[in-house]
Amino acid sequence: MSLYPPGAAQYELSLTRLIDAPRSKVFRAWTEPELLAQWWGPNGMSTPVCEMQLWVGGLFRTVMQAPDGTEYPNQGVFLEIVAPERIVFTDAFGPGWVPSNRAFMTVVVTFEDVQGKTRYTARAWHWNATDCLAHEEMGFHRGWGESLDRLVDLVIHKMPGG
Image (cartoon, rainbow, N blue to C red; front, side, top):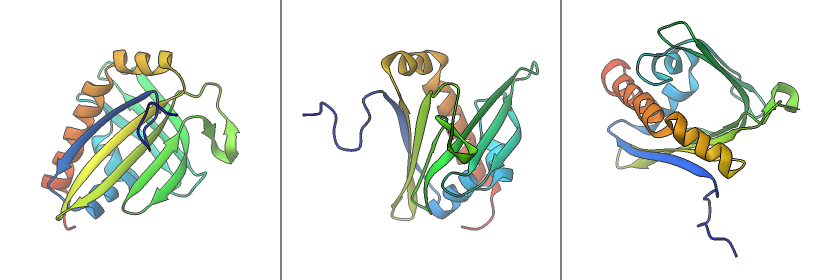
C-alpha cells in the first residue's frame, strides 16, 4: 500500500497556479524555444541556449546564465508530450536514450483548462530524499516561482493571440 495519492511521487516538489490565459498559449510558451528562453529561470537569469526536439526521446537542453556569467546547463529528453495538456521530461537520459551520468529529476508539467484559464502545475520528481532535499535547499520554490512569474508575464502581457 502506497502512502502517496495516485499520481504523486514520493520525493516531489511542486507548485500550482491559476493563470489568466488559455492553456494553448501557456503550452506554446513552454514548447517554443524562443518563447521559453524569455522566461526560463529565476529573476536575474537569462537563457542564452534553449534547444528542443519536441518528440518523445527528443532533446531538451537549456543553459541558464547568472548576471556574473556563471552558466547552469541542463539536458535531458522528453518522455511525454500531450498538447496542450502535459509535458514530461527527465535528465536521466540524453538523446538516443543514453543514460546520463547522474539522474536528478523528472519534471511533469500539466496545463488544465479551467473555464478558459490554465491551472498550471509543475512537479519535480526526484530519485531519492537526498536529491529532493538538495533541490528544495537550492531554492526550488523561489526559483521555479520566479520563473513562473516570468511565464505569466509573458503569456498575459507580451504574447499575442491565444
